[in-house]
Length: 174
Image 1: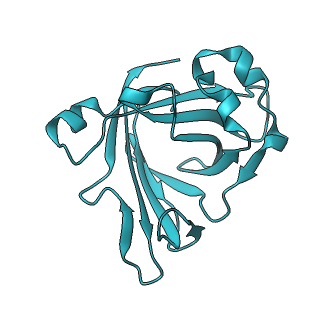
Image 2: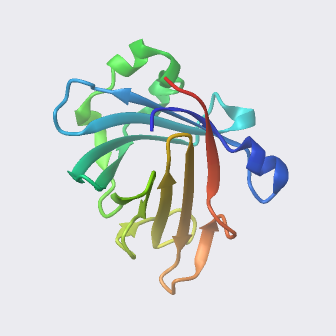
């Protein structure tokens, strides 16, 4: 999972998709309660101002299933660009995180790919007119597809890509 990703090819081929860059670095490597990652997502033309900063906590359920808890970061602005600055990441503490209840992603191995997502309407969301969000994810060694969508109480999509997920290709390993 760790690495630098871009969907530049997809954005060039289909203008319905913004060009996004995603950075994911491992943190807290000595912890025994899962693999922890700091994640930044930004539009390629405003890389210095990420629109999403999260911490993912990935845990093995069994040999073919993993879960990924999604955590928000209080005062994340201080960590902007931390994927390239280990000193900034040293300042990140577990007590500055908040679990996004109901938004855990469950991934199942299918050959060399892990596929999964959130469960039903369990992930509350207030972006725009949304009541809940869904996330579908597919992971392989060099590619990640992420399809996040928000829905109102009537089940109508109110934000997110309509045709399919964002296709991120890994361009660099950390």
